[in-house]
Length: 469
Image (cartoon, rainbow, N blue to C red; front, top):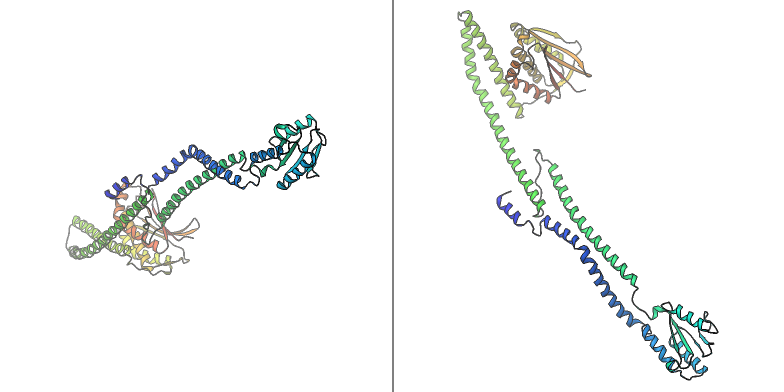
């Protein structure tokens, strides 16, 4: 990410699009949740309570309890000095006015005179002081709402009349327990919303991170990840931008690597062709020198030059072949072939070379054919490279073995020698010169679906070529 982008990211650290700012907002809301939400819930409750109280007061059929009690006492005062018939008539009149109510009146002697409705039970026929006290005590704060008023002014007559009305008709509003329920429900709903907001916040982050992870796992035809879409200018957006920058750098590096690879291949190809001409001239002069009368020391030097010239020619051939292989221009045409017959033919061609180097050839191949799907020319090249390595790096062992063994359920062709092996320091240094030849062996075997491995010990080196079962 460039310096201006970094500076912009720093300036926007607590910006609205920043994940940190949004997370801090959620945390701050959590800290303010308890001290603010309870007073807020109380204010809302009392506001609703006040509104409901006014509505209930307007909708009460007979007014509230105080108004009904005052009206009942006023009616009782109008009956000062009235006889029984007048009180009965007044009570029936009030019953028509308050049809939901129950009424009765008691004269000065303590006898119940009229009950409305007349079938009403629970009212004694005769009232004693104990009965009156018990009635008044049971009526306080109970349902139905009860009002008792003495007849006449200033309770002068000793008679009284009682009204019992369902409390719901004279008392509006809600009970005190409803306020607690309201506050608890309000807090629970608010907490649920806060939890849902937090969960949404983190699920949104998780979803974006999973999308970024999936994008990192995808590869194009060149094995490189594809760039992702930067959706928001926050921290994850910065990560997406950094990932896209990395992808661009990988693409640029791959293009540079391809260009360098093509340059290397052209260089090797041109170098191989350019070296052939002086090598041909050298071979011609060596052939001419071989006809001259040379001393024993001169003949030994000439033999060394011939071997090195042949090795250089083989190295040039291998370089050119390896360049063709890695550039995809070395075409193989596999077909069913008797591998053992091909090995016998190649070994027969190399027998004079081994004999000249003093190498004893031990060829123990079965008569039964071993059919593999291979390219004949490619497999001959593999054998030539392996046989050449024996001559160049294991001639001191004076042995070249070719035989077949069944190892781990697989029939393996084995090329063995009794040279110094891979553990020898001289062998390791010589292996550097044989690296291209063995690289060609590895490439061709893989292309034909075959496998190989080397087993080195003090007795020499064994190279196993086999086909997976």
